[in-house]
Amino acid sequence: MENINEFLGLPKSCFINTRMPKKAFTDNPEFELKKEEKAILKEEIDNIYFEYSLKPLILNISKYEDDNVRYEEIEIFKIKINNENKYNKVCEFIQKYIQYPMLIIIEHNNTIKINAAIKKINKVDNSKLVIDEMIYTDWINKDAVTEKEIDFLKSLSISKFNTNNLFTVYEGYINSIKSFIVAKYKDEFEVKSIDKVSKDIEILDKITKLENEVIGLRNNIKKETNIGSKVELNVKIKKIEKEIESLKYTLK
Image (cartoon, rainbow, N blue to C red):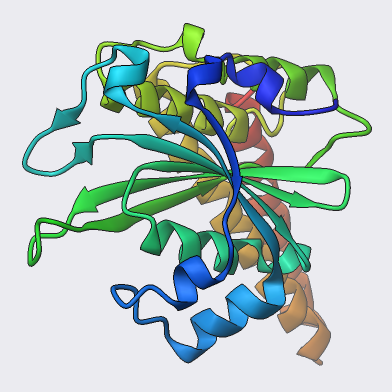
């Protein structure tokens, strides 16, 4: 896979492809970066590219606003990072200061990860947006893309979305990303309904919680000296693992 842009299906009129200097953040008096944020910008980010700007006039798609959300423009950034384990810190930083709904394509070596964020209108200062939820795909190896990953990337084409307004477009991005997340235990990818995706996300969260519980119980076994107690903990683990497998099956 050469470039993820080929899957987005966006017109050339939306293509910006401008490198953003780090001083666009450090020298902006409105941002007031904290010490740790300056460190993230300096140490964790290699470069930032403003790839696409999705505006009503260019796309002939209406903006959208209600009491909770504002969609005047959607921006797509591509960011190369130095440490793959710091992707969340980088995305949180960028999503915080760019006051538009965004897609961030994170690059590290030959892998990419896609981030989206649901932002709500700040109730204290309604001129600003605040992050309500951060959403990430797993890492995708550009040199060994699976058929499932290709199908997911194809689902990000704007031609697949409801283009009634910019909110429904971004909702399309969110739903495709979440559909990919819940396809974790499947060999194939399909875009699910928003309601079905929400239910599957709850199941995934429950699986994660149970897996963490198993890790905790295994650690307790290592510390336990009483044979009877070890047996009891093992029985609990087996029971939880059975529940995990049952939940995974519902996602297939």
